[in-house]
Length: 121
Image (cartoon, rainbow, N blue to C red):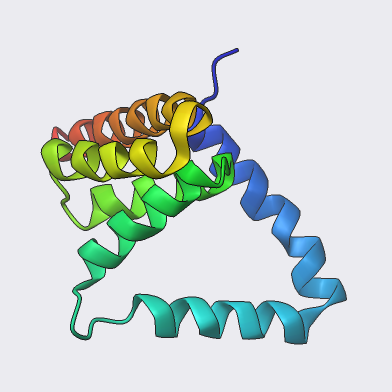
């Protein structure tokens, strides 16, 4: 099974619309939590996204992998930075995290290719 993370993130965004409509206060709170957690402080935004990706891999969350790899491409994370974070995720999550780390690597490459294509225009 091949996961296309561009499609997956778009699908999840669409699915989240029902939650925003049905439980708006919960989703507003979740959004505010995310903004606060990822705001630059002692750690910069890219470092926090690398942590989030590693946790998403260890927790086996494809949506997390999609959104955080997309953010890391936007934040200009290097392939080496992403893969080192994936190494930590493998260490913390064992065999299952290894499988999801390979998915996260593919997602990073997929979003990076899209960014490269846009830059070529």
